Amino acid sequence: MTRGSRLPPPTDLAAILFRARPAMVANACRFPGGWCTGQTACVLQLFPNSARIDNGELSLGGVPVSRLAGEHGTPLVVYCEDTIRAQARAYRGAAPGALVVYGTKAFANVALLRVLAEEGIGADVSTLGELAFAREAGIGGDRILFHGNNKSDEELRAAAESGATVVLDARDEPARAAAAGVRRVLVRLTPGVEAVTHQSIQTAHDESKFGLTPDAAIAALADARTLGLDVAGVHFHVGSQLARVEESLVAVDRLLAFCARAESELGWRPQVLDIGGGLGIRYTREEHVPSIADFIPPLVERLPKDVQIVLEPGRSLVGRAGVALYRVGVVKESGGVSYAAVDGGMSDNPRPQLYGARYEALLATRAEELPDGVFRIAGKHCESGDVLIDAVALPHPHRGDLLAVPAAGAYTLAMASNYNGVPNPAVVLVKDGDVREIRARQPVSDLLRFER
Image (cartoon, rainbow, N blue to C red; front, top):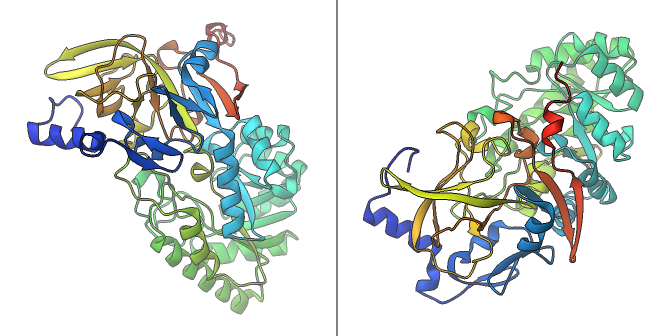
């Protein structure tokens, strides 16, 4: 159903309700953490590992959402620490000995970076700001990769001072990196592979703004060696929200072909092969995404045994760990569409507008009630396109209800804005009944702080 359309015809409406209401057929549905009923049927598969329904209320990390919202307000983004650690360990198990670095752009937060660092995860950064987050989290330069298609001299100097490995992305970058004091580099190869994902997050196709063609990469590699840089290896990144491994396997083959050419022409062999990240997560029950254990080993098995492998996951480390909590406000009908408006929207999650992203939702304090209609979840911003979810089956929402949106841990707050002068939400980390605020709610006064 597209935005601005009326409710689906009866057959489509029945299908939406049926997907949300298998309890009408069999009173309960099994999910990894227990049993779910009513509107929760199977939707808890999209929530963090610690999600539970107790007396009709969603809890995360052992904490009822009503307590979280009462103490920290809404909108609120809640991260489950256990889920983040489990994902980190899954990567380490899928590629023993590999250096795994977190794609900080998914959500730069010092506390989350510290949790990941405790699991042996480094950081993939691309700006001064992201580098500052990683350094504040105590991550050493030997576990930081500095990316970027248009690095400034200041960024190159900061990367050099931190001891980070710089990923060369342009023909003039070897000379600029050497002048900035950079010591160790990788060369980013564009393998000419078109990932099956949204075009805005494809990064390895022929027209990509990222990386170097094989010819240009050979030339950059030669220049870097002449300048005395330690050219440790080669990098590629196919894209983001990947739901299949085939294109990544093609990219690995092209990476190996490039390395064979570099050895033949330059007498150079890599010590490091960085195959990027990009594994997706499920945002809806209909989506199918491979597990870490299914996605990573086929790639690693293709690589030589005598090189350091680097992986750069972002979304798949923190995406499912995050849940957005909103408070329902206005509920009304308009042109045959049933709207429920929440106290956030495109300023804290622009993905629906940027990528046509789809989400599901749960009335978090009425979780065992059966849906009785299909609702469009609208944000509070002054734009008709500010729609978080086009159509979701829910019990009839009421003002004050809590709406929980799963899979909200990556590329939501990381891409947030202050559109309409709306401050950014608070962020909390939950584990075993404990709650820790890891980012304070932005006050309105902060919006005026830089005005002159």
